[in-house]
Image (cartoon, rainbow, N blue to C red; front, side, top):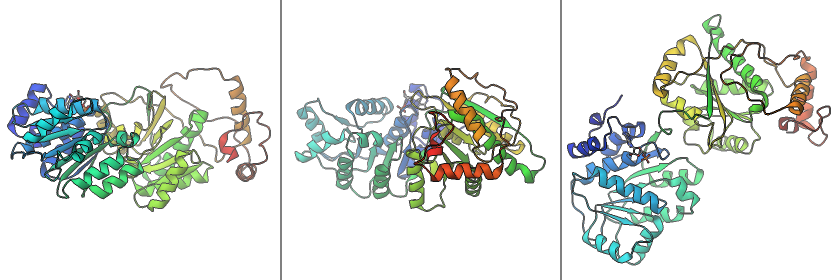
Length: 458
Ligand code: AMP
């Protein structure tokens, strides 16, 4: 595990870190700080609570310790969407810069211009501001942004929600092209992505989930299994995946299947499609337009399952999903936290399943070490998953729905013989049922009572 001492921060900054009582950097700090110290632009995808504020304030203090500010020409600028957040950033600067002489000013609404003008006139090393207030000062001719060496945009996604993006663009254009930019957002909505492409230069992408813990709303399971031989492993994995999907039934409203390799993303997507699932795929080799289309389909529920690689899914503004399937155990333990963090958001329940072959156990061990918990093992006997949706199963589902009480599933239950019964429908009959359901959306599907699953109407 990286230590603060390995990050290259100056003794004065280190002393303040010790005073704060931190012994190890958080993931975003250990990943971003060395690159920020080298002068690289950073694109940090991180939420509050990950330690991102120290992730940018510490290298800034280190770098700004040398040099002096000139009147009305701040040397660095931190933009935050709200007064509260700006004030929080200022507190961080005060805390970590206590052994370094740096002048700071906070430009937020509700504070008199006079006092703020006085500070700016004296010259500040760090200017922390909300975008509107900053532009007010600029328009009054009290401020020059041509001396900015480092600019931080914090919580860009909230800036977007609050309509600040045009202000941010304007401010970027008022600062020198040579500045270093540290840009943070919890998600990468298209508008934010566009700005980063325009204003960041070869940024180091750093993405972290909220701490290295996993949400309590997520029921996690791992299925450790063996295949007859190495060659049959991928097929057995695909069969197992379909079995689990079938077992989850209506609980699964939408899900992401993560694979470690792009080639497997394609294979798994094709396999699920062949077996009648509504599925799309995204990975880095796929054309951007196609990826956007797939994502749009997933967002508006036309596509139920999205098969993805880690890189392609990174930072995407994907809505909350009910299920995450780790088709492969991620090689980097951090990725596990990112992956399953796609479910169980905003207080909702989520389910995360992981398939683990013997050669992947070493990665599983690392994940458990990181999340500091053991992921419950699920004993899962492989049964042949239904190739496509069949009549009997739909009838059963409809009946179950009628009788459904709010029965709570015991968590981490050991599942055996989990496949739905009565799946021996002939292939041709089943195929025609699915095709008809897909084609004929005007005619109602008969025999299901009131309840017709959405996928049959598509
Ligand atoms: P932030 O994500 O920047 O809002 O930080 C969340 C909280 O984590 C703050 O209360 C920080 O004081 C704290 N924090 C930041 N870095 C560390 C660290 N390396 N170790 C422990 N706590 C930290």
